[in-house]
Amino acid sequence: MKENVLDVLMYLFENYMYDEPDDDPDRASLESSLSEAGFSDREITKAFDWLDGLASQRHLPEMQGKSDGPVRVYTDIEQQRLDTESRGFITFLEGAGVLDSARRELVIDRTMALENAEVDLDDLKWIVLMVLFDQPGQEANYAWMENFMFESTPELSH
Image 1 (tube, rainbow, N blue to C red):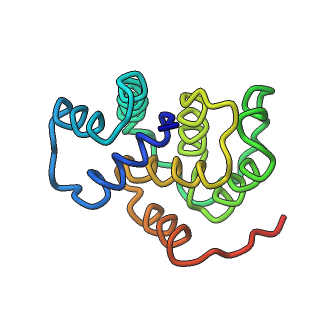
Image 2 (image 1 turned 180 degrees about the vertical axis):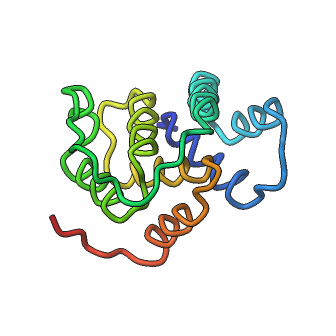
Image 3 (image 1 turned 90 degrees about the vertical axis):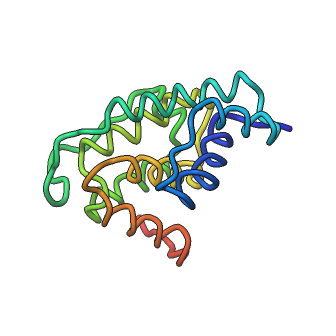
């Protein structure tokens, strides 16, 4: 099975967080379930490290409204991981008020923490969804993103 950290995270999200957010299975039972599902111990450990990094940034300051600040300039390594379409999507989410500057930086941080050579737009959407799910006070933005991902597939114009 060719897997990466994002595959493990998506499996966890779809099977444990999204469907049953009230249940709080312990880490050992989750690790066991992931092993049984065919994920390697290395990728499971990396996925939990990624989630720990997300949890450590759970209480970011609230930014109101659309981000009217300066344009985000991406570093060379960020540009390698996030293609033009993905960077445009982040800008679109900021303009729509779904991401404020603090959550934009968290999305970029969590994307970079994956250590993938490149993250495509579909992967980025999952990262945004997981970040918003974990952030207190972001329920409306999470619902918007969830609807965007699962209810419709509008074309983005640049």
